[in-house]
Amino acid sequence: MAEFFNTPKEVVEKLVDVGKSKCDLKWHQTAILGFFAGVYIAFGAALATMVGNDVSKYLGVGMQKLIMGGVFSVGLMLVVIAGAELFTGNNLIVVSACSGHSKWSKLFKNWFWVYVFNFVGAVFLAWLMFESRLWKVNGYNVGVFALKIAAGKTNLGFFEALTRGILCNWLVCLAVMMALASKSVTGKIFGIFFPITAFVASGFEHSVANMYFIPIGLFMKTQNTVVQASSLIPDKLNTLTVQGFLWKNLVPVTIGNIIGGAFFVSFLYFVALKPQKKCEFKKR
Image 1 (spheres, helix red, strand yellow):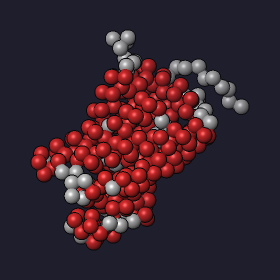
Image 2 (cartoon, one colour):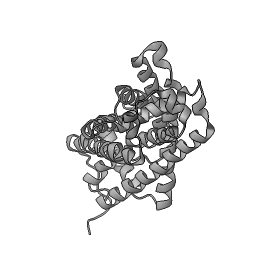
Image 3 (cartoon, one colour):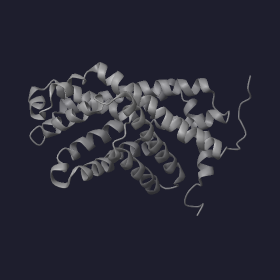
Image 4 (tube, helix red, strand yellow):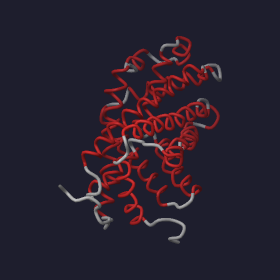
């Protein structure tokens, strides 16, 4: 069966090389590929909002979440197959750093710039979607749904957002590992589809996805027609601000994503299946 897929041990070995190549990217490469990843994840989030806006009315909340999860997975498919730098997936670089093949300083530099340009890409697509006026579809219901999603995310408690962030990136990083395990594009698609569907349908929190979901909600908040149609009480909307976005959601979710991906997946797989690759640079 090894001709069809890589074993877990082989995947961890591949992560060493992948991590080193990511850490060695030039700044402009990191910027462009980070921007792409923000846009690609935002494409998945926009599609999930468009498709899921009225599903619960006909099929129930569970099916709504399941369908949204399924279509959202296109975002990570674009990142992995088309090629982009995603902060949450790059938590797996820890394997390369722990094995001595990548320097920790380069890892943190990669995380910082990828995160920044993921943010730029996701917010850029949120702006494009707002200007497209596609939120008026279905009698403004798409915009109403976007507003409700954003308001729900900025009303989470710190520990709620943190734990949902942990659970989310645990699955996201497993999805990336499963994609690496496959030797075919079809296998990579299936390896990504199920874990990503699971995290979205379960209601977990992804920092880069929220860089789209909450800004588009902030745009919707400026539209009186959407606000009135949402029937949200003022208390629910009071936290939907730039400050609420950053401090009530993005900070705890990002911390949770790092714990879920860097520790529970990357570090623990390194400990369990420690790669035996020869280090290419000597400590100076």
